[in-house]
Length: 629
Image 1 (cartoon, rainbow, N blue to C red):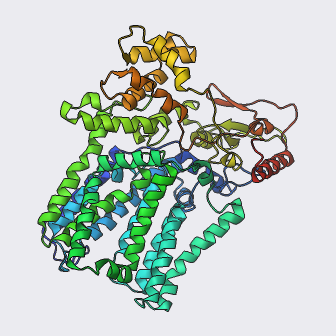
Image 2: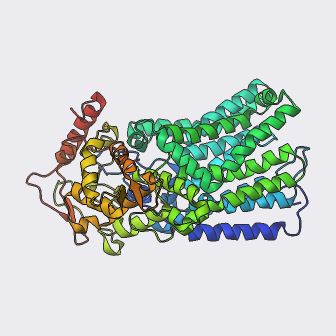
Image 3: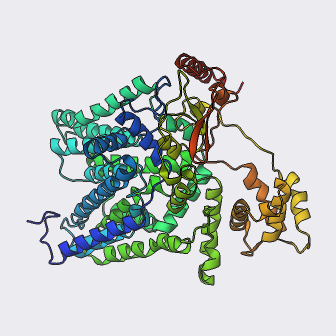
């Protein structure tokens, strides 16, 4: 009997599965990267490993949950204890293993696809669906990164597919709840899955599809979700991770819509979006009670659909996407391929429509690989326009994509994995040649303190230093400091004379040379500033976002709109800043010079009791809303 699916295996099923598994692993390795944020997890793991608990700064500082999810750092800690392999070396191999487990889960689901008449689909459609998944760039990209994404995606995909399983039993309920538990223990997003599981099982009991005894037994794993939330509250004085408070500010649908639209173009997600209403119309034409019966009989599947839509919708409409390229939608990409096949098979028995739909999705998803190829020579600032590199027929789409990507990157949204990898090597490890980890203790009762931005590598390389994270991901007070504007008000009235002065030839076009002149005037720098990497970045972004008529210049009317971007710019995950006096109150005394940390002696030591008093005072101000007063 075949292990995957119950239909007889064709002679090329297993060779093709092994080939696709090899392609998935090779592709993930080719795209492999680590980011600075991964080292935030690693610092927490080191502190746990050395007996200080899951904390960012050791006592006397209060614990802060800046690692987002409990399961990933715990696994890294257990692996370190068992093998002696530290998190920076262990994270990607472990993530790859979870990614390959996700491949197995998806392969099992693909080989169990059914036609409308209830028969299993042949291997051709199933393996084409799996090939479409393996060819998805984001599916492979997030097999690595050093973060918890691969583990969360495995739990999310398994939970989704279990929700659509037809056979319902106490064992199925327990498996579905366990998948939700794993997701919730990995990322706070998973609590949505736990809630949807409880609702789905509750409705199943009410309509007597499952006995209450089976439902209660199945819900038992979710008790651990409640226990974990209670533990977080007790240890960290928070219901949610500190990163939630640091990252989520005002709703940002303008960024989220661009993020989602670029995802749809690069991954072909518009194919299932077009197919879905056709499928619903066909089902309704065949049976006008289809939706009502689905609401009554397929409560688990409906809970899954609602959770998937809510999860994506929350990030799109509330958060504004994500700092990382398509991380929060990466678990949806393989599910969309399976959904495409399933909808086509429901519309019409036989493989022809399903093959056409999957082939279309496969072809459309090559846009993501085209972007990767065209941006392979990534400059230090991380933005490459596609329009100048494509044939004229593709330029309208490329220019639209450049416009969205330039706008997003300027707001610190959808930063590419290649850019994160380059930043890690070029900037974050730059203060520590040879990736040296510095261990030292300050003399006497004097706590070493340093204020940092980009806290990951710094936190790993300086384990004995208390770090004040100025963006708030690992700082309770900064994460609750209201976002406030800073810098000059670059209004149209302010910029107009600068742009006019730079447009020396009065030809009606604002080109790259004139942009550099305007930037030089604004910054007060010389020719070196105009030829710098930041200037290159600004020129590329402005041409991408505002240029509609030419690739190399803006009209003066387009140039006038630049202030709209500058005045309303935000910075995802980097909008929080310390309140006045907060950092100075801890009297930071650690600096980096020539790749070595140096402790500058204080006139009066910062003792443990003073640290406790300062933290209590600043937290009281935060709770009272007095941080900026």
